[in-house]
Amino acid sequence: MKYDGARESVAHKRMKDIIAESLRLDPDFSDVKVEAIWKGEEANGHRKPDVRATWKGTLPVAFEVQLSTTFLRVIAARREFYLREGGLLFWVFNRFDMANVRLTMEDVFYNNNRNAFIANEETLTASKEAGKLVLDCVWSEPSVEEGILLWSQKEGHVSFSDLTIDRERQRVFFFDADTARERCEAITKDWPLRRDFREFWLSRSAGYDDPKWLNLRKRIAEHGISLPRWPNDAEGLVSLLDTLYSAAEGHPVGWGYKNLVEIAHHVFARHKGHLWPFKLMLAAHNRGEQIRKEDTTGNWRNKKVKAYREAWTAPTQNGAADFIPDRNFDGLVCFLFPEIANRLPENPS
Image (cartoon, rainbow, N blue to C red; front, side, top):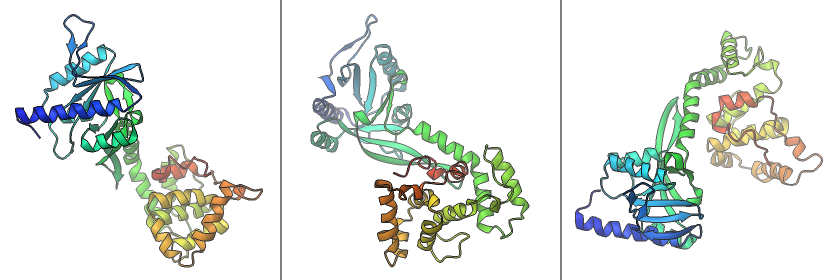
């Protein structure tokens, strides 16, 4: 929103006061000044940031408020100045909505790894409660649906210590959109193979003597993952994939059971090594409420889940050892189910 001269002056001044007051609450910031001259080493080189402060005694930070249009060349010149002077340029908005942004706002947003920071009366209140600088952060987060990369807007309160500082590129961010995008792009690249594998598994014949399996086996081998000549040739593979696809689909796949909680009881009794990836898949696909509704006797929640947790929190001779994850197929599981790939290698404890 563009302000007229008088209104912009009042809004701008209030923004500076909010930032300065919030900074003075934060023990990690010192030497907080409003509109103080920042002298550069070069002759006639200086700037007057809206607010300046020093982070942890070492990093000078220039906080600049952007309420109305700032020319791109001006933004670029300021970045160059603060980089040259060993400082950090930090842009602050009073509101930010990806659906209604100006070109200059986009420039700041994308330079900050798809993050934008907001200060207002609400963040000042949050800063007072926290005893440190608190800002609103708006960021774009990628996801993959049916092999397509999509972006959605997220937001939340952040403190300065939550942020990643990249001084050489004059950018600051809470959410690392670049890394998330790379991960999603890798998923989209391999999505056709995941799709084909899923379609095969959900409709496979009992005999497995299907040339489609051999084709999938060959394609997956190109990713450094070895599959047996036939699924039944590897102990535990069929039960593992049936379990995980059941969690993903929300109904039994390959099992002769009525619902997910019956599968859960079977896995607990016969395939304890699969409980960890099964648990992750249930969480990744928000199956918690479904399991609770299907658990009409309460045996799963009150007995099996309790036993699993106790085994890892207070392991006995036959406790956690019984539930150690089967790691023989971790590579395949991470490839087929990237939604749990980050957590799968973890210890369930």
